[in-house]
Amino acid sequence: MPTEDAADEVPWLSRDQQEHWIALIGVISTLPPALDAQLKRDAGLNMYEYQVLVQLGDSPQATVPMSDLAMLASGSLSRLSHAVGRLERAGYVRRVVCREPGRRTAAVLTEAGRAKLEQTAPGHVREVRRLVIDALTPEQLAALGGAARRVLEVTAPDIAARLHL
Image 1 (cartoon, rainbow, N blue to C red):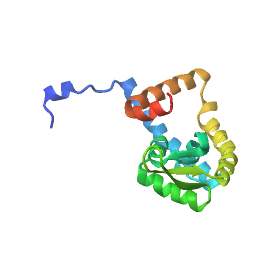
Image 2 (image 1 turned 60 degrees about the vertical axis):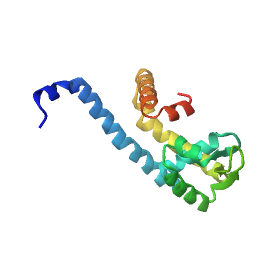
Image 3 (image 1 turned 90 degrees about the horizontal axis):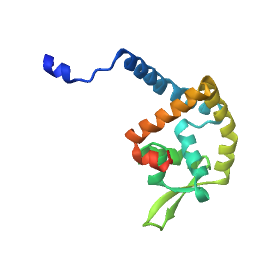
């Protein structure tokens, strides 16, 4: 049991801070599964696989080294390897060896993958609008975006820098 002095040193959350924190935890806990469910139902992809396709689709030549892609899609190399394997079997992605810089494996978006991305994006955007964008005023959305960027700069500065946040 902490001593009274030790308890006094803890920067406890105020009631308002607790309420905001609990609301954030609720969003973190419920939004990803909701988006994942829509993607699985409508496109047969999970959210992570979709993010991999998006990152590849947004890159020049639709090619990204696997280590970079893992960071951009917010996953480990192991998770990415499994996802790319599933996407390869579906014909959406293929792996190639890059010679610059060094010898690295990269993922490449195939034409079928680009078609899948173009087919999937409208439904995903509709769900993002329904769950987040249209549920907020423009001021709330701007505040949420600013807060999310700031938290990402603290929790994952390398990702924030790569995403140009």
